[in-house]
Image (tube, rainbow over all chains, first blue to last red; front, side, top):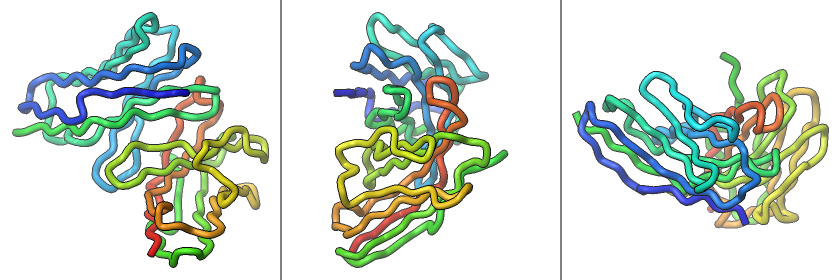
Length: 111
Length: 115
């Protein structure tokens, strides 16, 4: 069945450092890979997404890379700020109808 | 920016009772979804809905669950006889087209507490 592994489960960095979160998926038919940021008690908010015809996408301090051969994709946050602290979820779009989420990464950015 | 709206924000229900969670998707969206998130865990897919019928559902979405789009704006999730393990945050989401083309936008969720 569909499964998305996400690492690390927690990540602590100093303000200004970079943070990298990695996900591995199992369904080779998946072709849509979003990343969501979820602050405590709030909704998941889409921060960036990538489709399988693209290897990399960047939006200011956030970038996502996709390796379809290896079935993994990564989120890169540069120049981290305390307000980046949240839980980040990767997901894969499968069956054209649903998202399968990873287990989440709790990112803590210390001033 | 248009948003998905969910009500109530918190619902407390006795075990065995029926509960209905309400969602108003973004107005021009065509695909609707329900997900749930048990406290501290990942977001799990429940059901997707398109063209007035269920298009996909997960193992979690058993006979106790149903969805309905009673009018042109609302999308509801009903749990017929709630169990303790139904306690979770329930998120509604909508997208303009299938996820391959357009992202899913989530509401703020309904926290369901079963006593």
